[in-house]
Length: 344
Ligand code: NAD
Ligand code: ZN
Image (cartoon, rainbow, N blue to C red; front, side, top):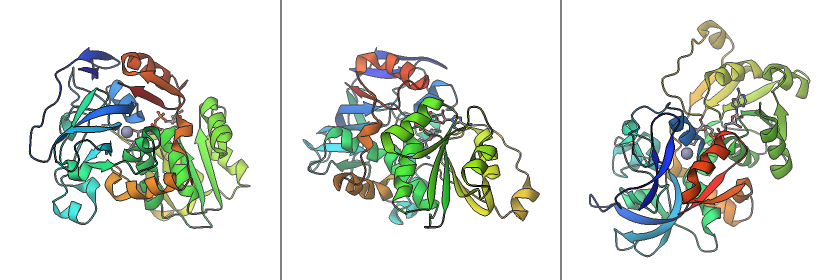
């Protein structure tokens, strides 16, 4: 079958690979109908994801039809979670799937289980009962696609930020994850949501397509921009939806004392010297999301889509054949695309 495979730092290619088969009880094989490229795939492309194998299949956002596996799934249209949980450990039984003792992820290398990914014609999904979900009636593939990763991540980010009505929420990164975090944050009715990006095109997209208040930091430091936008009041919650150390530093500068910062962007081996005294005296509450708790948030995300409260499909700017995946990666990496959907 055809699949997008990693070819070493900076390289992906569409290749012929063996079709996946049931490997363990509970596995399902899904014929992928739609899959997407995520910011986490760019980290991988940039060689930032340790343990990704040359020739390993990439991809973890997908919708499709189950062709083999548990009887109750076969023939059904499903969406998949990027986070692969076992469903039976003590964390899973407490709905903390992202801390599952057997935690894995699709298509993200050896540190997360070396599972082949979903930018392919078929994907094998372990513990299907936990990691697949039937697409609710009335939702099409594209509507459901992001509830297994970036939309669930946005919902999880908003949840761990504990947003209250008097909060001013500053979200760094107006990429898909930042946008979806903002959509989820909106449901808590904070005083303001500020999306911050240094790419003017991403700022324009957030304003024009989702009607967000978006701030361009390409010319000025984020703390100055946020000070200007808030008359010096600054933010009370900040989210790193980028995954770059400089953003955590900036987040500390744009929040008032006693604020929360949630780090949702993915980190590999980066290091940051935290000014402990400053963080302590200012009472900065720095939280790391870890992998998003998809299985605990995807119902909420799907309900919000079904009730027309939000429309994740507006973020899709490019629909390409899986054969053209390399062009899709170039479009997304250069930020000409907001979200690229691939059709095998
Ligand atoms: P993306 O690359 O499309 O978006 C990142 C955005 O950040 C871009 O618009 C870029 O211009 C902007 N940016 C870069 N540096 C910046 C800076 N210094 N200040 C402000 N903006 C800056 O990626 P995405 O798909 O939106 O993903 C964002 C992050 O979320 C990635 O790190 C990804 O790995 C991570 N992620 C985490 C989870 C999770 O489970 N925690 C799930 C999905 C994605
Ligand atoms: Zn992802």
